[in-house]
Amino acid sequence: MSLATAQQEVDKWIAEHGVRYFDELTNMAQLTEEVGEVARIIARRYGEQSEKESDKDKDLGEELADVVFVVLCLANQTGIDLEAAFNRKLQLKADRDHDRHQQNKKLNS
Image (tube, rainbow, N blue to C red; front, side, top):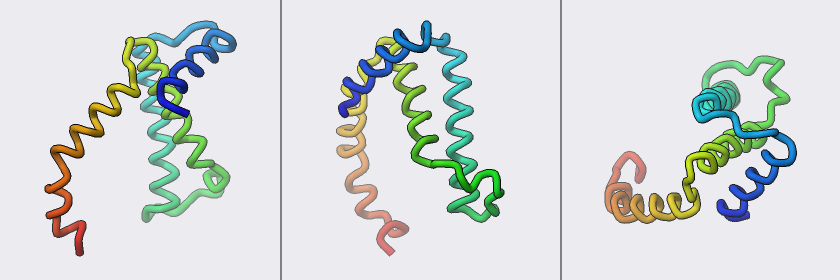
């Protein structure tokens, strides 16, 4: 699914199930909460913290999807074409970072 299609699907979901978008500040707080849930799973599952029994059934993919959903909501309600913005950013990073990462001894050891 393209980002443009994903934005349309989120907008459709909001219209059919969500009554309306939460305001931008509420969605920003929601995004922070969802990123925190991703961080908790990664810190415990892949980091050095031990995983709590209550966290073992948490689905990282589902939590990442929650992050994407809220990002798409924010893009929709602020008039951002996320696909165009992402494509611009990807090109910028390719132009700016290609040589830097190729020459990074930390990445090539």
